[in-house]
Length: 324
Image 1: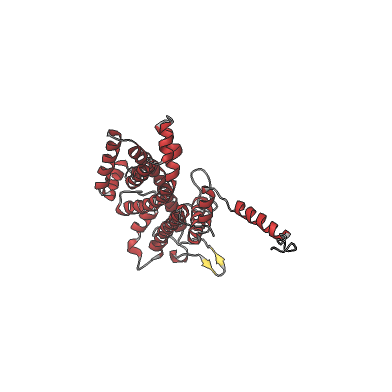
Image 2: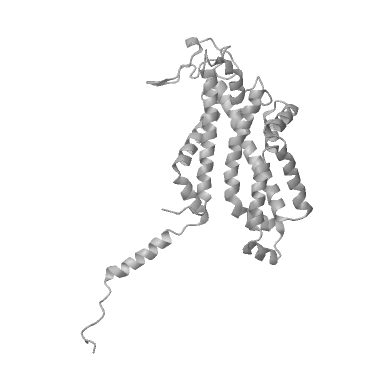
C-alpha cells in the first residue's frame, strides 16, 4: 500500500519561472529570413572589414576632388600642371601624419597625381557599379523568363545567351568599346551588354527548380499571372544567387574596364581611369614606381573588397549556416 504521507514534491517557484524564461528565450531568437541573413553577414569579419574599406575608398574618391558641379575638399584638380615639388615624389607622411602638397607625387608634366588617381578611381567605380547593376537586371530578367516559360520564349533568350558566351568577352567588349568611343557612360553600357550571360544561366537554373515547388503550383492553380508569380514568389527565393553574383559582376567589371583601358579600348585621354594610369606609367617601375603601384593597389583593394563582400553574402544566404 502507498504511504498516505508520500505526496508529490511541490514545484518550486523557480522551476516555473525557468520554463517561462525558456519560452521567452525561444521567442526572442525567432528571426525572419531577412534578419537571419543580416545577422550572418554582420558576423562575417572579412566581409565587414572589406565593406568598411570599400565605403572609405568610395567616399575619399568622390569627396576629395568633387563630382561634376559638386566641389571637393582637395584644392587641386587633375588637369592643371603644377611646379615640381620634392622631385615629383610623394609628399605624404605617416609620422607625423601629413598629406603634404602632393601626397602621391606628380606625373611627368607636373600634374597632381593624387587628383589623377582619384579621378581614375571615380571612373573605374562608376563603370564597375553601373555594369554590376545593369548586368544583374538584364541577366535576372532573361534568366527568369527562360526558366519559367517553355517553347520559343525559352529558346530565343537562351540561344542569344549562348551566342554571347562563345564570343570572348574581352574581344567583344574591345570591339564595342572602340565603336562606342571614349564616353564613360556608353562604355559602361557596352560592358553591361557583354557581362550578363553567366548570371542569366544561373538564374534560369534556380527558376527551373523553383517553378516545380508546391507554392508556385498553388499560385498557378489559383490563376495568378505569370509575371506576378515570377516577381512575388520565385525571384525572392533566388535572391541569394542574384545578390552574390551581382558582387562578382562588380569585381569582374572593374577588372574588365582596367584591361580595356590598359589596351587603349576603354577610357582615353584627356580623361583617365585606373587602368589607363597603369598603362601610361608601366615603364616608370624603375624610375618612379609609385606612378604604377598606387593605381594598381587601388584596383587590387577594390577587387579584393568586393570579392570578400561576395563571400560574406554567400555565407549569409546559405541556409545551412546556423545562428550562434
